[in-house]
Length: 260
Image 1 (cartoon, rainbow, N blue to C red):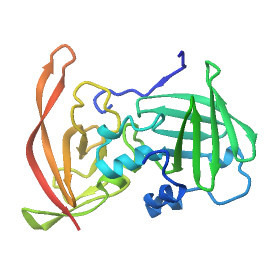
Image 2: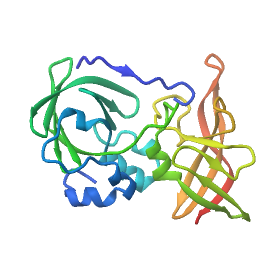
Image 3: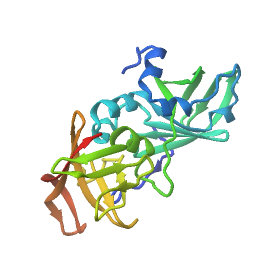
């Protein structure tokens, strides 16, 4: 199908539908629910403004703590509504911008460039997208981070946000904020969780720890209940033409942190 795609560049950083509405709302955290739309009888297209995340993706992130595993959960990872248009994003890698048309109260539709119709309905604070026989649920979630393209507040909040104690140094504490600030490391003051893994060198989930905005120190991680383990990444295969590592392997354990 021919679509006009807007590619989201990825250079160096480049559960289920039969869940009830009650289940959908209960799994979302309190801060997510506070961001949902008010309960009103009639919505206009302008009431939809903001980011709506696919619940399949959100469930997967909460369960696996892995954006790499979760990347292709759901047809659209999230949808951003702006005025009377919407950007439908596929797997945090590419998207299509379409005009949103009101069909009847609380029901809308979009027509893509091949005249395929995407239908949108809203029930309380849950959006249902129907496209080519697939129905998926979305909830409003503040995704954006200032000056960031390759990560989201959702990943920060659902994976890392909180206070930790360093296992080998009980007096040392590390904190990760929802807006990408990290405190407690000597060499880093901010972090970024990569959301797009369709690129060379993306064999593992990628955590970028930084002191300056242009830094790209890449690490990976794993969780065991409340214990966060951060590992170095070693280069397994380097492409001299591209001047970059195209295959990595998990390296030395650098930090072992227990969430307070």
